[in-house]
Length: 394
Ligand SMILES: Cc1ncc(COP(=O)(O)O)c(C=O)c1O
Image 1 (tube, rainbow, N blue to C red):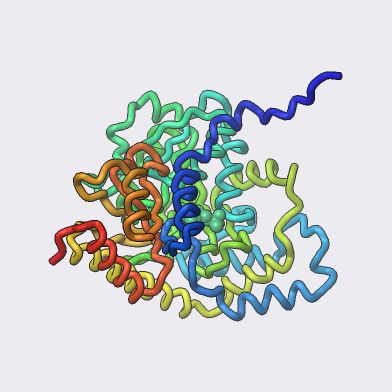
Image 2 (image 1 turned 120 degrees about the vertical axis):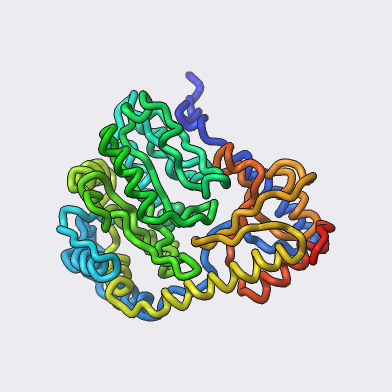
């Protein structure tokens, strides 16, 4: 008898659970010993989804006919997305410019497979949201990271990228307000990058996860509202964070129909569409009142003020995030690298953060906190951190 070969495919060797597993192990050790951990490491909103969205899902799920394969996005869903884009972002969309995906995570993960051939370059932010890399890797693209550095306002510098790389680039991923660095970008930044994209012939893929979580009077916008953008790229538009529906997996890829077609062609090989009750929830969110979304943005800003302000008062110079539900904190001098600092923070304060290194090499020297607790609690946590780390507070 031959031995069974159950070893996973070599391509999966690329993925290890290293950094997150190490921090998580530490967390479990503390909990097993009866200690309490305050988890600010994961961006799962603590707010509830709107009542009308939950109701729409339940009503739809109560109908037996809504449990069959959906196969395609309903007309109702596509027109809800188109109407929302028109009223929220001033962008006119045709239906062939829209497809649902099971969350940006899944869509972005498959995008590289749908668009890339070996030898294509994909330009990704470093630090960046990890899923950006996955599709490009499985699509056998050559990945080129562009650093997001504090001295450049965490914005890309295309003038620093080799022309030969730009010429071979298939697509560049942009995402502002940015997870993990918390920076926002203006339209001028996008327009400048679009000039490069035109010159070198590459696509722009924008991940618009946080246009509703943006602070200090900045206006969230869609990349597709910029002149020429609908031809030269596409945008992921997730409802996860705006409507607190992370588990329902609702996102859309919107833009140039050729990109949408490629992604639909790939996905239709292994997917039979979005569950109708989830489509109903999406329609309810997009057609419903948006005052809750605005109130939530203001609450995130209050949390940002409480936490960043609190850390600064405690002696830790953490800049204010300009958007997203995250804080990107430079590690205070003398506290080691991001992984050892996260461990120190957890052991001394019980606060779990994510090491910046987990988002790419340029994330070293930082940790990321998620603003997933009320403002008053975050203010207390900030003071507690200052005290336990022995920072010299004001
Ligand atoms: C930048 C960014 N893109 C996408 C996502 C995930 O979106 P979805 O829930 O639609 O997969 C997140 C979630 O944290 C994110 O931070």
